[in-house]
Amino acid sequence: MRIGELATRTSVSVRALRYYEEQNLLASERSPSGQRQYPDSAVDRVQLIQQLYAAGLPSKSIADLLPCVVNGEATPELIDRLSAERDRIDSRIGDLVGARDRLGTVIAAATANWRTGRRCRPTPVISMPGPAAGDGDARQSTD
Image 1 (cartoon, rainbow, N blue to C red):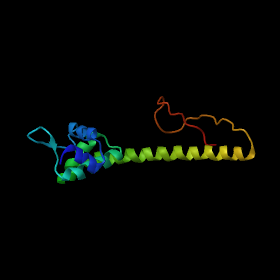
Image 2 (tube, rainbow, N blue to C red):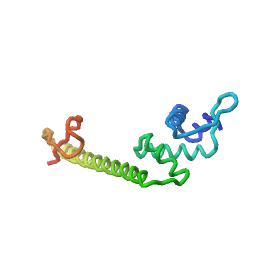
Image 3 (cartoon, helix red, strand yellow):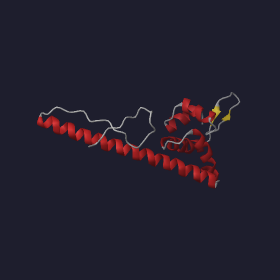
């Protein structure tokens, strides 16, 4: 199939498919006229690449993972790397849950103030565990 059909079948842009080739995530054959030709299996591969990107893996990690998935080639190093990626995602989830909880507290306080006609008072900013200092991520107290 040609690149346009692969793009349509996977809901991925032609530009993204070309990028996947540049990153050695996807391979194509060339027709005599120079057009990219993909096997039907490319649909599943593109969908897998999309899932791995959605999980937050960078191109390099995806490129390292694909041989394991396609050929069943797993190594202890690959498993360690994937485990580290999962741990990174778990950490990010924890940060997001904390941010959501703090926002929920602010919403509850604002709602209570609105219902009683009281003015909102600023919440003091305090240091919270999370991203490194200096990254511009100010944390607010939930007291």
